[in-house]
Image (cartoon, rainbow, N blue to C red; front, side, top):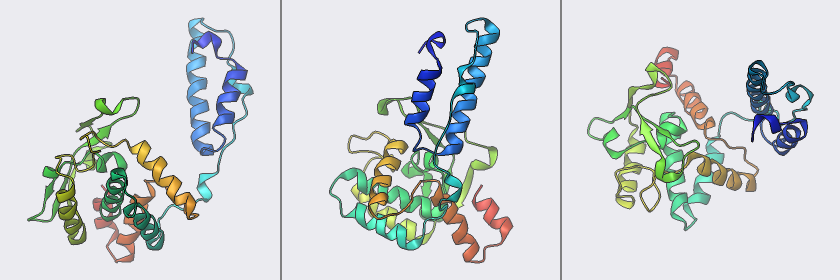
Length: 233
């Protein structure tokens, strides 16, 4: 939409449609749009910034669970494993990997088979998937990570090694998490599909909480803070 056509009505309609999304995220989007429009005022494209009139609502995510319990994880995984569609087999294996390693969703979905050293029980974390705003045939992995510490060699748990060995017989592609045509899986599609399953059981789910679950597991198993920090990268 041309900036000259972005008025209060268009903005309010947009944010009203997002009222079921996170409140903080909606506030951040409003701030971002406001900055763009203020810049347009300085350039002389428009005379006023309509975002100041917009009312933003949303769900307060701060009160939601940030850790997936072992019981809830079992419920979700069992449901996915009983489904016939191939994508749910991919989803369940991706969730298991995140639960056992604490990797971010973009890191999990970018994994290739040569990132695993089964002999020495190691995972080489050095790539993330770039997918936002792209079609699935344009998805690619990059070595430009979130931070310098994001690149690391992580321990591969025995239970995950055994699960992956079985999975690699099912999925013969070099990409660990791809569809039947060999394309990378869209993390947004994964999240939306798993959220629908979780809603059926009254479970709150987002992929990032698996990282929190991993951190909590480390603490429960008396891993010292410094080591836990390094494992979380």
